Every structure is written in C-alpha cells, then in structure tokens.
Length: 342
Image (cartoon, rainbow, N blue to C red):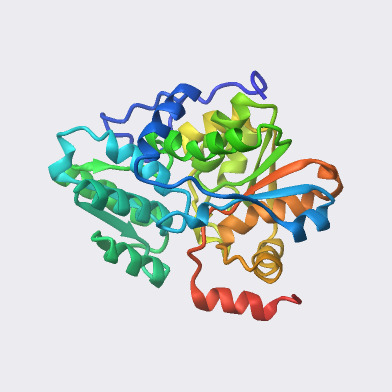
C-alpha cells in the first residue's frame, strides 16, 4: 500500500508528552525488541485449526497469543517498553488507561521490573480484568463512562505525578514488542499468504505489518467492528477525528479515537481493512469455542469473523489468525454461547 495515501500531518488529540518519540519502529526495532521479550516470555504456538481449515478450504493457523502470562498479546509490548524505560521514571512509575489487556501488560511488566503501575479503567469495566490488574499489584482507578474518559483522567494524573504515561497506541516500543509475534511466525512459516488482525488502536496489526508484512509476501488484513470503526475511518479517509460513541460487545477494541502512529503504519502496510458486524463477532466467539475449544474475547473474534467474511477469497491459501486474547467476561461469554446454534 506504500504511496497510496497522503501522510497525516497532525497527531491525534490524545496527550503526546515531550518524552514520547513518535518515530515509527522498523524491522530492526522489532528484532531488537525480540532480544528483550524472549528473556521474559515464551514463544507462542502456531497451530492448525482443522475446523476452520475445513470451513474455509484453506490452511488456517492460529497464533496462540492467549497462552502468554496475561492471556493476551499486549504483554509483549509491555515487556519491551518497561525493559527499556528511562531511569527517571522507574520511581515515579507508569500510568496507563485500559479496558483490560493493555493495562494488564503494563502491570505485569511493571511487576517484573519492579516499577509501580497505576491503571485507569472505565467505571463498570470487566470485573475479571480489574481483579487481574489488582492481583498484578497495580493501583486501579475507575473513572468515566468509557475508555477515552478514563484515558483523559489518567493523562491528567501523569502530569501531576510527573510519571510515565503509556499510551496504548502512540508508543513505538509497544508496537515493536507486539511485532515480535510476527517474527516468530516468519521463523516457522514464511510461506503465509494472509494474516487477519483485530484492530482497536492498531498496535497488533501494526506489529504484523512491520514483521510479516516487511519480511515476507504476507498480506496483512485489518479487521474492526462496524460499531467502533475509528481506525477504519482513519485508514480509509485520513481523518483522526474522534467518533461520538461506539457500540460493540468487543470492549477490547471499543475506542472512539484513532491513533496517529498506528494509523501511519497501517495506511502504508495493510493490504485490506474489513469491518464486521456484531452478529459476526458473536458468532465467531461461539464458533471458536464449539469447534476448537478456545475461549476468546470479542476483540479477538473479529479476526475470525474477518476470515469467514473473506470466504472464497482465501480458498487454498495459508492463513494466520492471531488468538489475541482470552480475557472475556464470564457472563458475557455464557450469553454468547447460549445465543449460538453451535
């Protein structure tokens, strides 16, 4: 996609602190991140899904990021960022806003390296994810109706405390860290034709663009919920304008504000970007449990829904779907199973 779009000149409206370097990471950056990440995290399995392979008449491989310590891919980025953290912030600590997985990644890495962590979450956030944050030793502040209101409060606290605010998208170290999953795939299967990536803030898809997309002929496809299409709009229209609201069961990708850095990478690196319906996401959650006995979040299920939507377009291909997170609320998960025909 290089050269298709004009560059976006201004950053998004979320706080960009003076110590944030928004220089996009490169393949070399991701390779350096891998040296840090592999000291603290295991390589995740890449396994064939027989049911999805049969359904799509393709060789469908699942990248099992749900086997990582926090149950989601983001911990790769947390480890890389905290491992390379400037000394001035090690005592003041880290602050982040999260609907769950970003916060858990920073909390886990903070505990690993002895750095205090505060996470802001929306009021009424996934109770299981809040409990996990607290178990990891993080201070949890519940504020606002959604992720973006919680983020604004945490940004204020970061200024007050002179602490290191960790943006969930505008962080080269996070993107490089999560990109290490792509290098693992390159090692095992450099012949992948296509990978479907869930997109919320876009760090995972950006990481795959910088690894698989740069080192192989793999087409990187982003997938987002129709009810929360902020990044899709940014990719398609070149606007970083915030949405007024979002409406999706996939709270892990329910952000109203697109991120400048990941948008820049995705506009250059994605081969395609798809939107999927709530019904398709719900179906994918239930389907993956019924056929593969894998518990997934709605955010993760968007990638499965995207592959199913592609249908005949991927017949005969080798396709990767990252199982990006398993931290779904139990009651929500049970409701989705009860609604399904599987």
